[in-house]
Image (cartoon, rainbow, N blue to C red; front, top):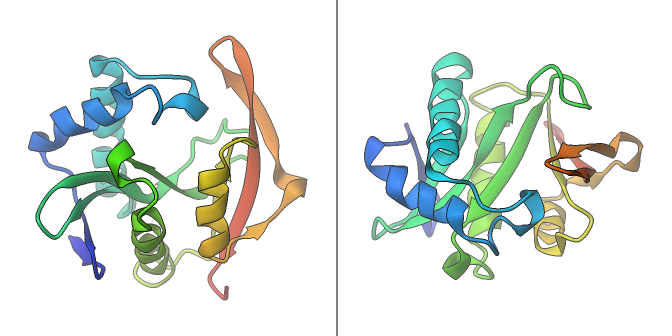
Length: 174
């Protein structure tokens, strides 16, 4: 399955993506707001979860590439674990290679993932969350017309600290 946008393509994962996926997750600046870099086994396990999610739910975080085939990162919908502080839900997220920041790729690709979630997948609500200091992701959420919902903000352990998530919501009728 592929979803094309004017500048990007969202697609299923390939085994050949593992090196680029690991490099993305090893970058300290890219991983600053989520507890720091992942090692290769952690990165491979995360990619395996994304592949399994598509097989189980029909949606996942998709690989993003430009039309020249260059890996830019990922975006898409994941079904949360039931033990999440917000309970079971669908959430949208994105992570891009550092060189792709500031070019509108996250907004463009995430908008396509949201359309797919509401049309093909039939989801009624998708949430997004980010750390209070991640202003770039908050700007993407605003450009996607997600609605801020402070009543659903949460905290959860992340390593040796408590991570705080600010919640934004998209509904099918947005």
